[in-house]
Amino acid sequence: MTITTLALLLLTPILVWRIYSRLKTQMARQRSIVSRHYTGVLVFAGMILVSLSEVFNRPYALGALAAGTALGVFWGVFALKRTVYEDTEGGYFFTPPMRLGIVMAMVLVARVLYLGVEIYASQQGNVPAPRFTDSPLTMLCVGLTAAYFAAYSVGLLLWRRRLRQAIEKA
Image 1 (cartoon, rainbow, N blue to C red):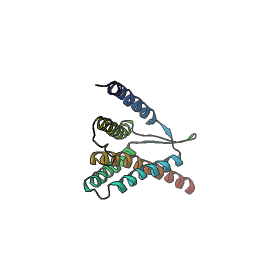
Image 2: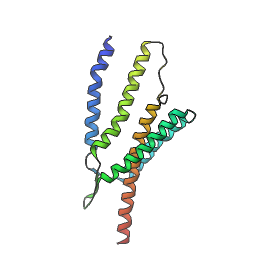
Image 3: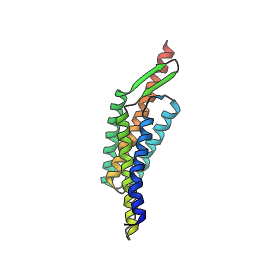
Image 4: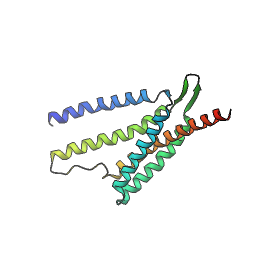
């Protein structure tokens, strides 16, 4: 075992812990900012569309991406029902379901870390490094995570639109 391998084995749990603790702070009560919601829709829908363009001619990866996207939308709608919405004098706030959001994000983080280990291991031999879109499991994780956060952002935009329409009617 080389020193680089030992360093990776020791630093990976620290990296996972830091990502988890960062996500935990992000899944607390937040101010609703419409531009952030639009950015979420664009970025996460873009993740799905770019992945779709890469796997369009590979049926297993395409099916996994479609299944992950469908599951992500389902869980996004479920999370919107569990979200606490607040309309205060200080602005609009929402509190997402912490555990579900962390799980969705960590699914993709775990898969990216696994791919990093695969790439590192392939460098030791003469095996070509895998592409990000080669594995159907990776496409499932990308679809799940991206669709969850895209659906969640769309739901927040719809909530803000309903609030604006109620104010205009009053």
